[in-house]
Structures are given as C-alpha cells and as structure tokens.
View 1: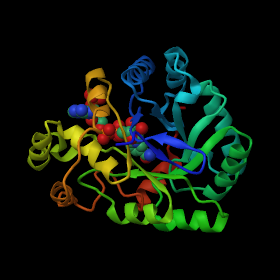
View 2 (view 1 turned 30 degrees about the vertical axis):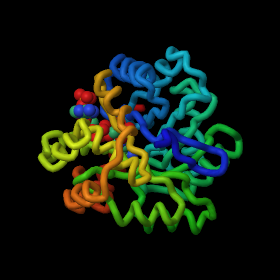
View 3 (view 1 turned 120 degrees about the horizontal axis):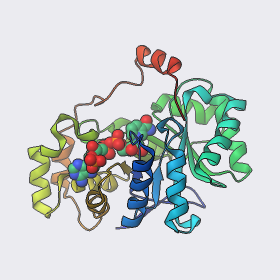
View 4 (view 1 turned 45 degrees about the horizontal axis):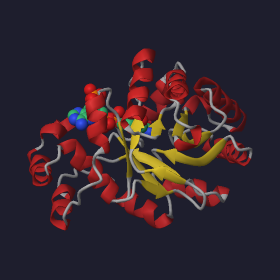
Length: 284
Ligand SMILES: NC(=O)c1ccc[n+]([C@@H]2O[C@H](COP(=O)([O-])OP(=O)(O)OC[C@H]3O[C@@H](n4cnc5c(N)ncnc54)[C@H](OP(=O)(O)O)[C@@H]3O)[C@@H](O)[C@H]2O)c1
C-alpha cells in the first residue's frame, strides 16, 4: 500500500499524520515531535490555537530532516479570519515555526470572514509561503459555498472521523468533489471505550494488530489521511505500522455498523459553541 496521497497536480502528502493538539507543555510538545519524526512521521499537524508552534518549530530545526522531506500543517484560528488578519496570521505562524513556508494551511473553523481569509491564503500560496490550502470542520454546504463562490476548491477538509462518527456522507461527497479528507481524532481520543471495543478487538486479532492500528488502517483504506496523537514513542511506532494488511469487505461492513452518526465532541452547527468560540481568547 502506498504511503502517500496525491493532493493536487504538484503535491503529495504522507497518508499518516501526527498531531499535537492538547500538548500544551512546550518541552513535551518539542519532544513529541522529535520522537514522531524519529519514528518515521513526516506529516506534522499543529495550529495557532494549540499554542505549540514554537515547540514544533524547534523540533523541526533539531530533527535534521531536510525541510522538503517534511509536510508541515498549521491552521488559522477564528480570531484571525478576514483578509488583513489572515495575512498577518500566516506570517506569525511562519515566525513561530521558524519556517519559510508551510506545506498546508487550513482555516481551522468555518466561522468569521472565511472568504477574506481564503483570498489572503490564495495570495500567500502564489507568493510561495504556503504550498497547499484547505479548511477544517466545514460542512459539505460550507465547503461548496467557499469553493464555488471563490472559484478555488480547498485541497483538504480536516474533519472528525472515527468509528463512532464516520461522517460517511461528507466523506463520499468530498471524495467525489475532489477534496482530500483528513481525519482528526481518529481514535475519538479514546472516548466511548474505543480502545476496549470488542468488535474492533476481534478484527484486530484477525490481523495480529491493535485496535489503534485497525482504526488507522480503516481510514487509509477509505482514502482518508488520519492524523493521530500520542506522546509515547512505542505508540507512535505502532501507529505508523498500519499499511501491511487489508481489511476484508466483511470487516469494513462490521466497522460501518459502529457509526452513531454523532460527533464524539460537539456539533459545529451548535450556536452556543459558535458564540463561545467567537469570544474565547487563545494564547498562540
Ligand atoms: N481540526 C480540528 O478541529 C482538530 C480537532 C482535534 C484534533 N485535531 C488534530 O488531530 C490530531 C489527533 O486528534 P486527538 O489528539 O484529538 O485525538 P486521537 O488521536 O483520536 O487520540 C489521542 C489519544 O489516543 C491515545 N493513543 C494514541 N495512540 C494509541 C495507541 N496506539 N494505543 C492506545 N492509545 C493510544 C493517546 O494517548 P497517549 O498520548 O498517552 O499515547 C491520546 O490519549 C490532533 O493532535 C490534532 O492535530 C484537529
């Protein structure tokens, strides 16, 4: 099985990513990224709102891996939407990461002046500051609105995908529409007993793999790039060792039955959540 996906004409991205959400301690974040790169990860996923871009940048610098061999993603927080603010935010993310360019920059949430942001991101791409641009947590209506009214389709939509929230309608739509899907929280952060789920354990046993490995492989087999997080080296290695087996059609159908159709976290359509985000202050 390939270890990358083609994002657009020029760009390939690794099909397994490493994320650092909720790793707020700077030395822990730096060490996690150093360990992840050491274990073989090349796609690193951070965001301005995670408050650890500096630590990620230090790890990249220390890793001694050639810049072109890494695929670095960051994201625009809601308080920086709009044309001018986004231009500044891109510069700020690059400064904190100590990088000349980002491989991928995403609008983190579908709120605020995303059209202004999108224009600034397109210009930053033209200027070589960003290789690929995309969005996160956009519904299929929101992404179609942005793509059709701006004339530029996002390369990526990073959305919640895990066995309990499979987002099948969005995934099928985005794949037909030509937008690569990235899965955030592929393990649902362990919620709902994911790591002790009997159905998943049986499938894992069939292949001599762990539940985590089955879940990551299930994403890749659906054409989705999962971005998972662990601060433990042995789990990072395990989470990369997922491409040497195939799930049968029967196993795929069995996993499909675990879908609850609901987010394991919160709905991005919830007005209370949108209001909370609009007034939350974020340390970058
Ligand atoms: N765009 C967005 O809005 C958004 C939202 C959420 C997340 N994300 C991105 O997606 C990434 C992953 O999501 P996430 O961090 O929320 O959750 P996740 O990857 O679903 O789950 C992480 C949890 O799983 C545990 N874990 C990892 N590998 C394991 C294994 N092999 N066996 C048992 N436990 C394991 C980790 O524990 P240990 O660390 O102790 O190993 C951690 O508690 C984030 O880091 C971030 O980059 C994006």
